[in-house]
Amino acid sequence: MSFKIDRGLFKYDFIDHHAVLCVPVDADVKEIRKRYLQIARRLHPDSSFTESDAQKQLGNEFLSKLVNPAYEKLVGDRTRTEYILILSQIGKRLVQESTSVTLNTDLARQLVEAANVDHFYKSAIAKLAQTQYDSLEHVLQVIAQVSELNLVYLMRTAGKSSAASPPPAQPKVQSDIPQPNTPKNPPAPAPAKEGLVVEQYVRRAQSLIDKNQFAPAKVELQEALKLEPKNSRCHSLIAMVYLKQNQLKMAKIHFDNALKLDPNDETALQWKPKIDKALGQQTSDHKVTSSPNNGDKQPEKSGSGLFGGLFGGKKK
Image (cartoon, rainbow, N blue to C red; front, side, top):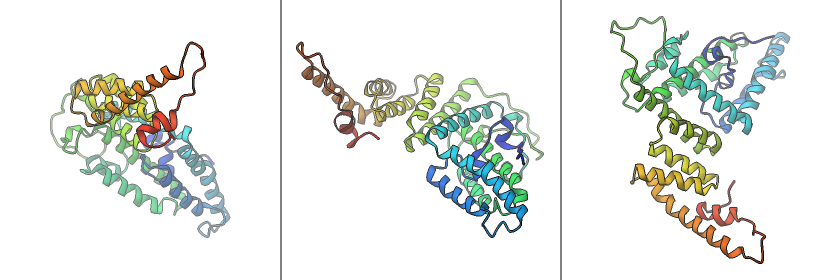
């Protein structure tokens, strides 16, 4: 049996694994694993929920063709990183194509207008998760509905400049809901649009840093700096990423840039002196352990010495 879904993120030739498991797009591995176990117990052939042979077969197909692949994709370090990067690219595309997006569910339309985007989105996802696999005949419709919520959430968070953003900052979507008779606004100026996109990069990067996913966080910040090379916050954040990866020279460069742009940047003020000291010590150690009579280098102490000295423990 083939499972075809043509709504939400699925319309972009993308398998929305978050929708299959009915978890938010920023769910962590622990939350994903917990949700997977709930679904797996529900769909297992020995479950009392699947009483008839036809139900058992359908439940097993959902488990093997949709649920298991989604779980494997979202919990593997490499596959998860790749997936998140692709998802972020789709988010950027949605911002550009927001006027051509058509929504089919009332819940997704309500999310477009919701004042508290995160609360409404996560509450809706949690409510749908309670009954997502209750009726196997309607599972695909529920997945499509969740994927539409994911699509709108990506658009809203991409276009949200602040908690007090005016309505024009919200994504524009086509729907069958009558719109007020107001003249169409011209496209926003390029600099403002770039600013919103940069904030989207920064938001995603901060979320990835909080989850210790430094490689994709660096990619997000590098893209942000291409648009705004003089953004002090981006320089400060990417410096922290380099610092976490024990690339002290790169961290110093970006902390220097952050302080040039904003002399009061707290993160740069806190960490730059420590990096300068560590790099100075590294140079001193190199001179002591190198001599004309001994061309061999001493092994670098990147754990308990340099990196561990900054963070109080060994690098993971």
